[in-house]
Image (cartoon, rainbow, N blue to C red; front, side):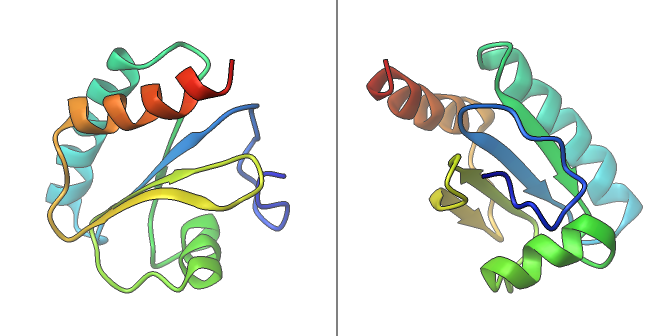
Length: 107
């Protein structure tokens, strides 16, 4: 599906949505964090950064009723959340492992 109400391009397979808390320092840290997740996952895995205070980030936050930030979601093609971490983020390899458990079961 791909959350049709947003402007986020959709790819097949699970996507990683990373929400900051709106501060520049957190955004810079989360950008590096997202790049690490991206490097640990297959090329087709979509890693998306979202600001919960505006634009698509606000729309997605409201759609899922998210309350605690920073936050990481693994979102499936049918827009369901497979995994969610809030407040304290997991290590990038934990997110990669969770993705491998999903994609390994999709073959």
